[in-house]
Length: 132
View (cartoon, rainbow, N blue to C red):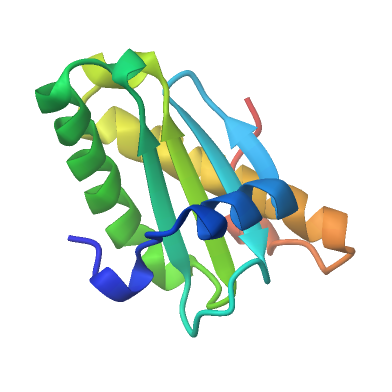
């Protein structure tokens, strides 16, 4: 479960992360990652799962899976990170393992793009994922 202090709840938080951050996507998810877009004392994560993903039951299942996958990766996120995860229609037929893999790949790639954009040093080589 994703603790409440890490969740985005307001539209302005989502907007700031999306406009200020870098984007990376896979077949199932799009991730917007930004450092410094939030004034919170911890990383913030928000999820967008539209009706294109499916009915209410399917959308909630996808959201629960994405939250659980992101909760596993919270220790790796910088405290100033703002992450918005948007589920694509292909997410509805995906397993937890598939969503977790796509999510990890996307947020790490978006983080690298965000670091390059800000001129910061790169992510250590050991933490990099191969680009598909």
